Image 1 (cartoon, rainbow, N blue to C red):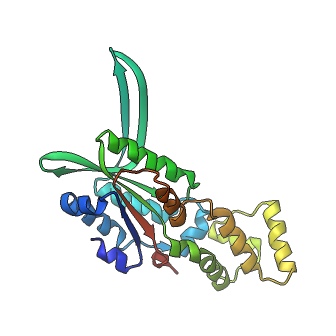
Image 2 (image 1 turned 90 degrees about the vertical axis):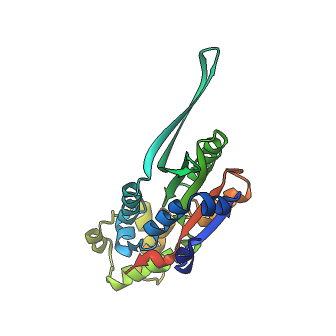
Image 3 (image 1 turned 180 degrees about the vertical axis):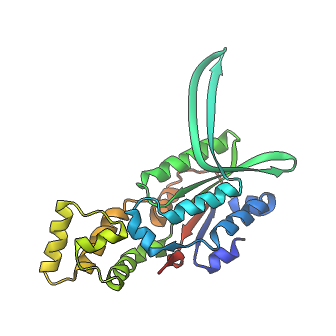
Length: 247
């Protein structure tokens, strides 16, 4: 299952029998996810121009999922005792699609965490856990930056800066990059004065600031699931590989 993604370098992890559930009851969902991801790519210029936020490529992936019927959905769970509402909790999921299983409509939920603060994983997994416990979803899915992508971001950004002959802050303007803060400029200039190239110093500052260890990526997601966050909701976790980046 999802063999083409695996061959392309995607990291895949199934938890709480998600693989058996998806292969038996949701083959169409698996096919649609593979269709959406197998040709997914992000030009390095979009990562630079995004400033670390959601790239145009991620937005394209969202549109592909929307076109396949994976729509944003808000679930509201209420507790009513003797006609008195005691509790109301709302969960909004970016991508949800219903599939028919043995004559019943069953939901798959999906979140894309390209570059948020890593506590968003706790929110997503706890949402999935609650919705699964209430019988609202059958499987929860998270797509995030894979470990190979995270590990190679610095070298790719530096490659971009070198190939485009970026030698100053002014050179970055044409690529939609905001001028660094005074603190960041001082740090970069100190590195240059110490003998490093501008490309090396700016690239490190950019990646550390925008895609640092405390953002959403594969290892942070694995930290959560090892601690049991989201358990026992069946989960499909997908890590985007470095191979999606194009030059």
